[in-house]
Image (cartoon, rainbow, N blue to C red; front, top):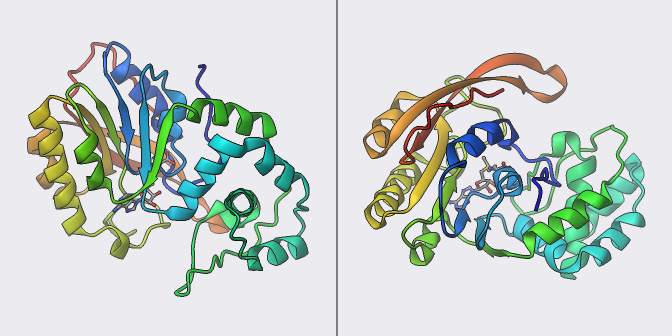
Length: 276
Ligand SMILES: C[S@@+](CC[C@H](N)C(=O)[O-])C[C@H]1O[C@@H](n2cnc3c(N)ncnc32)[C@H](O)[C@@H]1O
């Protein structure tokens, strides 16, 4: 199936990395594809994957929305068609707590499209609390239908990244895109709280990469350009340093250069792309 773009906005989305990953994997024969920090799954949607995909994330709302799009896209679209995108409607729908999985999926997509910057943020009680985005929205139903087809060969599950270990086989490909553990002063965007992915988690990720290396599978890791990250991962694969332009910080946005590190055990090709 032709490459498509993700149907959600997601902090830390990797659409800017697509040319790099496509180039890196162009000659690679791999079996199953794994994306255990799925988010908007922009790399999954961009790759031409021949075998099965295993997509997972710790965010249960996100997994439910992807499952709804995969299994019940027409019902999800019907729900969205009944939703106005003005401010009053936004706050009314934000206050709802549907239990039906299709309605939950539609609400997730609605809030993602109409909220401020498409952020996903919940309060201590688990209630979504992002304000209205003040933007005109039209839902792209064709893209949802295309995504549903592409997802039909994907296993979706909600769990910690390390759970993929039990499913991995030699020559599988794993794309790893964890939240950034460093604070905004050091690098990175503002959307993540370091508490959510600790240094301890980065070490656990290093151990998963050791396992991937030991069974002869492939991985691509993207991570913050930080000396601690280099220290943990540089012995586990070759490191590529990329710089890209980034729009940071919503309304008071400014353009800045962001450096990120990529680590991989896939051999270098002669024509690696730069990215933006
Ligand atoms: C940088 S985002 C991934 C973005 C994605 N590559 C894209 O293009 O949209 C990181 C994701 O990791 C998830 N996450 C955080 N901690 C996790 C954990 N311990 N296990 C699995 N997923 C986790 C977050 O919910 C978030 O969706």
